[in-house]
Amino acid sequence: MKKGISLLLALLMMTAVLAGCGDGGSGGQTGEKVLQMRLTSALQSSDWQATTLQNDMRITWVDVFEGLYGLDEANGGYYNLLAKDVAVSEDGLTYTITLQDATFQNGDPLTAEDVVFSYEKAKENSRFNYVTSFINSVEAQDEKTVVMHLDYPNSAIAHTFWTVKIYSKAEYTEATAGGKEFGIAGHTAGTGPYILKGFDATGADLEAYENYWGGAPNIKKVRYQVIADNNAAVIAFKNGELDYFPDVPTTEWEAVKAEAGENCQMVKANDIHWLAVNYLSPTNNGILSNPKVREAIAWAINKEACVMAATSGYGTPAYEYMPHEYVATAPDYTEGGFQTYDYNIEKAKQCMLEAGYTEADMAAGIPVGDIITYGDASTPRAKEAVVIQSNLAEIGLKAEVVVQEYAVIGPRMYSQDYDLAVFGDVGNYDFNNIRQQVHSESVGMYLINYAHEDSPFDWQMMEQLVADGIATADTNERKEIYTKLWAYVMDTDTILPILHTGNGAAWSERINVPSVCPTYYHISQWSWVE
Image 1 (cartoon, rainbow, N blue to C red):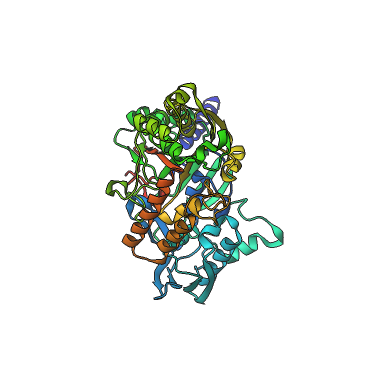
Image 2: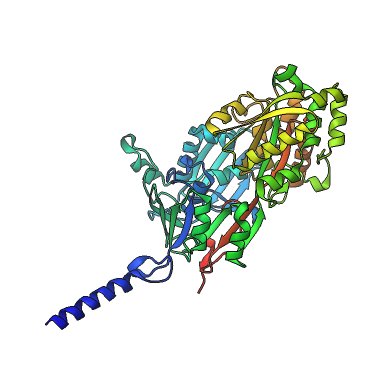
């Protein structure tokens, strides 16, 4: 009897052990594989409109929701997604959009009414004013046809079609009945390849939508776990606890690369770090209003040193606002057409002399104010600020570095309450997005107020070039127009490009990753290794 009980207990224990085993990332008793991913912080919301962090947007903007257009800047940029076909009237004011035969994750078919509803929600949100303000109306012509009327031709509308995601009107309306908030839980209101089953402070869980209109994804389950610390993320990857590791810290790239072998790639990020020079700053009798001082600063910046300090050498010096490799309408510095600056102390000192300062002034030190940026001392921008501080000292300009959290620094930047500022921008896919930095209507977004009453700049001409750029759909014409605009901006010496960062990604031997996208990866394009 005792032997029988002992044998039974042993069998039960072995069964329990076997049930909990399986290869790394298994789904428990079913043995189903689970893709292990990282979030740097808890998911903000399951509503695409409420997510602002890139890590979150990779989930809500790509996996869960979709727009009329998709985006892959490393492989051609914008492409038709929920829009099967887009016809444009001869005057460029009317867009007739035929929809795909797609369904929402709740099983309901995608209709024109859902698109109208989603665009109306986006137009109500001031965050998306920059991509919706030119839209006069959106109407449902029939079940699968949307007609969009514009106030003026806007060839940059592709960015709108990518940015605005489509809700299930029925599910959104039901979820928000009685004043409830949408996005606080999982839902099936998107058309994307993955359903967001739930999320909390520890992470988020996705499950493949088997009836996805583009074909069921090969990878069925995805688990995002919150790993805030970069060092902890590196350890997790080395331990096989992460299948895909995007945005690998450049300081750890060599170690991660050694672990990943061939399963890794470093690409140029679609971003820009730049130095804003506030010509309106009152510091030291308005020293930065002197164009020769601003030019001296431009020649003094050692971009290579900034790249080494901020990215461990994996970034690249920047001469454009947006990398021309990823943005078809972006000016290309290799083709000329605008002033570029590289480190040249002799030219910088000569500019200081032409500005009216003497060798003795430079030797004594000339106060130029603060160099402000956001984050903490370990961030790339802060490291760049320290390098720039040293560069300026070489030409006799004395500056202090001030690094504080974005909640403090951001408002100062956008209200021009600063002298010099190191700023970062990411997520630009059409050069029309330069509008946010040069147009007078972009109050609260630009760092340089070109249209100020004391402005020495031809800001009306700048804004006319912005308007001209979207008035034509010809890519070459737009690039030519934007090159003229960027040439003028560079002549003001107020926006000084510093660098584009490097974006390294590594993945486990369990998955096939066909290509590395610098911003928004697509899990639905990956597969398990057989």
